[in-house]
Length: 448
Image 1 (cartoon, rainbow, N blue to C red):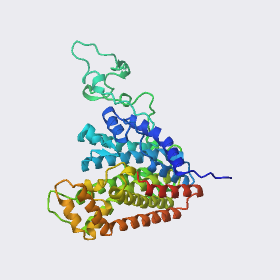
Image 2 (spheres, rainbow, N blue to C red):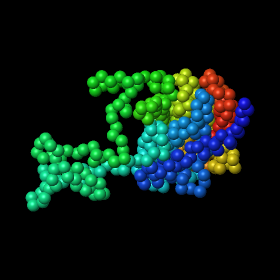
Image 3 (cartoon, helix red, strand yellow):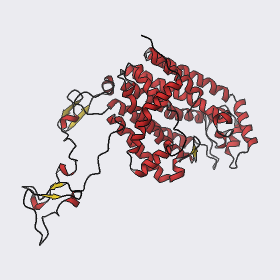
Image 4 (tube, one colour):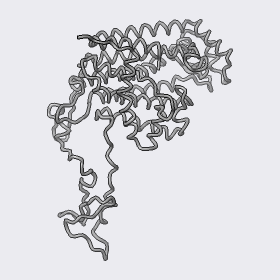
């Protein structure tokens, strides 16, 4: 048997073909205001194609790395993309950024409040996709209101002929609705039946559909779920007759969202405040900056890899190693991106020179320089006035003289090595490990 290895471009194109259509369909399920925000955030309304799906590619290949079918990981990849864009929208709003990846940010177009609601809709949709495993499923129509379709409580009004017992009143949309109070009801109160709120084509769900004897232990009204390791042991797959809920995947997604929220809290506390003289030690800033990166970039790539491994049926140990691979890779990628945010070539990055310094962003090189005692940099960044080109160039030189630039380069290389070690410990399939190594090396040179 001959195994043909794909290039990174091939893998990214393949991932886009698998993930892009269901992602479009999933976003199309949102109600109009939220859908407009989501399409703006994803770049749907611009002529440029959407960004490269590095996270999706990692998720799909990780499914194959544990011997599974990458197609089973598509739903998880869609969920990760939705969580990423929710987090990015929230970050843009908190930071006051007007552009992202050369596009207007969603909140700058529609306003902060509609953007916030649209972001929450994307987050809810991500959990829906992860739980059902179906990004393309249809959403049921809104519930019909019984009060608008039933006769008034207490029977017909004076002078009106009520329908005989057992007859039906037509609903507003022509659907027959049972009329009149049920036998034995007190005071003529109308009893709303389940048929009023469930479409005719929907199946009646019984309790047995949602509780499996081997999944949960039921005593009276108490339901005890099985442990995380057990949920992950079967790769999160539901068996015949079980609820279509990927417990392990939903748990990983929930943990990731918690980390993203915590990272935003930390970022708000560590942002350089140019309106006060409040000072913090450089070592504290660097520690918190690394925490933010790990709980943001690291958590997202770790989630993508873990969801792929779970969908592929990986055992808990392999899932955890692939998650660590993603976390370490995410950190390495962020070190590279932050270096480019100061010393990147504008002709290559498409951004002006020193973009992160212009925004006074507390990037990893800046935090490392402050930790090394670069007081001159702290004074430059604390000024309220706009930094000119000469001041920006001076700040970049101060960072480099402090040793922060070389330290960040070394940290990125060390983190990539740690990521590849975690990948090796996951004992992936040979073809998959070659593609994951290639993706990792590519991502640290081409941060998205």
